[in-house]
Image (cartoon, rainbow, N blue to C red):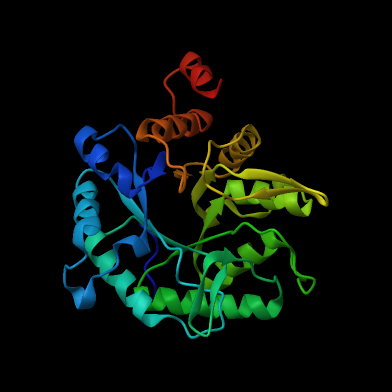
Length: 297
């Protein structure tokens, strides 16, 4: 039996850990509840040997002061390529060293015949794809020896073959594979606007006990002749509409940690800390109403 998640990640807001901030984090030890690291940035542990270089050195030192989660972007779970066992071996070695509170991956694919795209590509939502994903997630959990979280991905097109609404698909996957969910509120909003569905319906359709983490990020709006497209760029502040949707999410999913993602055009660490404070404010983790209003304004 795969061990259930027993996370040391507090139900507060954390931020994504990025290399330009390593030194600042260790020098200042900022007041933030936890950090999340992209797993693949710290690979290099061959057969348990500690050869991960400087990135792993910093990760281990930061782990001495903060809870950490590991967030994967390269496993390509939805691909029909064989499951990448060398990748999973490196991830397992990293898990053994870092002892993260949570480990997550995406509901997406990015490889064909061993060749990888630099993107997280969407899946068609069909019974066949659901069975494939259940098998892949189950095998991943067996190889890692632990439950993982699966994140709903952003998308910019819909497959005509899809027969299952996205929210029903992610719930069925979690229930059948016995995994948990990382609910990306920004991705829900982006997809809702791109594909014209009610984002609240997505939230209301997910059983609260399945959600173990929430992501928040900024996105970009592009206007074309055909209309407006929202793109999950992770390169700016969380917008007001996503903050509003996050407020609805924390009303439904109580005591769930949230993570501020920012991957390009990286700002000073202080900006990320302010976003985490705002997330805590929306979730009610502020001492008094005046301070709460100050953060949300």
